[in-house]
Length: 446
Figure 1 (tube, rainbow, N blue to C red):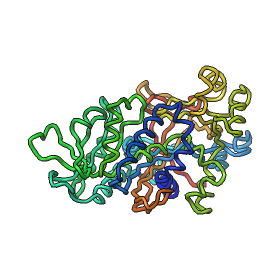
Figure 2 (spheres, rainbow, N blue to C red):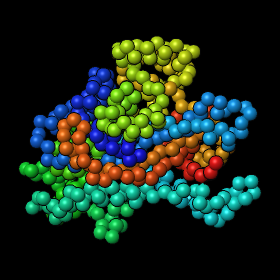
Figure 3 (cartoon, rainbow, N blue to C red):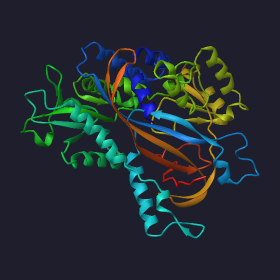
Figure 4 (tube, rainbow, N blue to C red):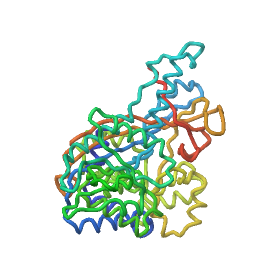
């Protein structure tokens, strides 16, 4: 994950490369257009912060190789004939870390009390990995907070981290433990939450030198706090960028606070960036050859649906009912439940204007091994064939050193992991939308 961190931190500082990767999105994808417009507006001001933070998540599934699912092999044996392939890379508002942390603790507890058995033998506790996501993510934000240093404005009494969250937020339980972990550090890191939209403009303001001051409404009689780090957990939907939303995001972007992430750091989460990195030579712009080879080994074929020669070939493939079954059509939208799979692709493309096709990428389907398990959700307990997805969290802090991808890594580490399992006949993996469950891997040796 450290190589992926390095790669995406470098990309986040390469405006030219990002623009070339997403330019076909700008006329047809409202979120991309809004974000790029804010970036353009922010560029007109002199930058006052060259340090950025990142909390990333790279998602993978096992992919069965030739003969992996041969009838002569057991399911257990077939797993050894798989490789790890990337599903997607997320650089903005990566969720699930707290839930994964709690579920891992639950499974380890149930193992300790003897609830789990394999072939009538108790689970080996060492086979269930520990997870420290909450502390890892809090540590990354704390590191950025300390990097910012003491208040720069004479108007501020202290510095603090500010979470930007969605109103009526269903992700509350995923966010709050990170906030508590910041407050509960040996040297507490003051942390506040602020709803996306009008409240940003109502309760924050910029000084002349663009320190971001926050006046908690419940402490209106005291001095404001100066925001050291803005942690974005909202602003990933096009509907959030009305004029108020644009003004609010611009105010955050041009402030002296360290952003997690910046606008460019947000744009690199788009699927078009994932596709652009599969173009021969793209990785070598940012990585040495050995690092590029490591990253490329996790790729499956991904194609644009634009008017390029490769895009036209992919359009022919995507509109062919027989060939499309082995592919997934992906838009640059977050939150799960947005992908189009297999035989549904030709009909879907026929239902939208061809001018919008370039906002999608076409990705070869990963073929994971199928196992048997039980899933527990709000609808009850159910058993059957399942597949799983592993997410690796990365935490990083970097300083921009040049306008073409140059950056100095100040912190770069694996933050932890998430693990999600769904029924094998369900295409999507979003837990929030009810397609899967948080899980814990059971580690075995060959």
